Image (cartoon, rainbow, N blue to C red; front, side, top):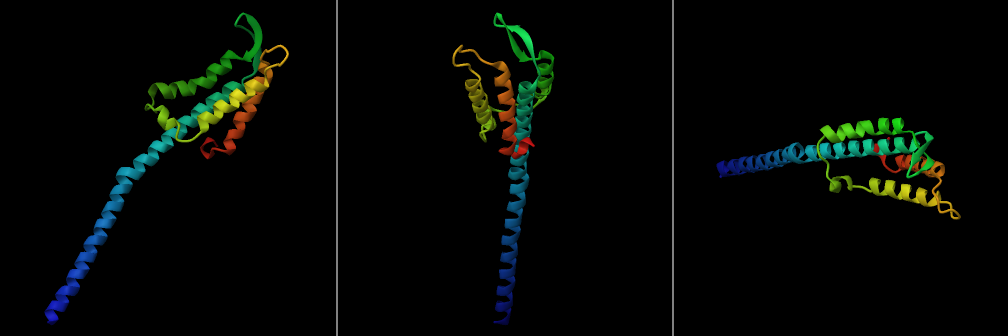
Length: 156
């Protein structure tokens, strides 16, 4: 009888040890094969969106100069500045891993950027002449885009 009790206690410890080992093994496997890759992918997506945001904000912040466009002279961002603003994002797009549109929409940053620019464009249209005041448009866009940093921590 004593042998049965000792064997019973031993088998309970063995079963408990097997269960604990299985749980630990599963947890470690999950971390290694699922959590870390997902987290790394999210970091890459957020880094890409930050570069896209920085490029856009930079372009709308470029100094405005009088330029000929669409058969009229108007204030537009200085072209050299725009090229500098887009250089980094173009390089990332050419050598980086492809990021799908679905991945970019894991939050509303791109939508918010679009809304800001659309609203600034509406505000900058002269009601009487139906023309766009580019100075007001670009200034408004740069200011409102800057405010998005408060909403998306990864932009800081």
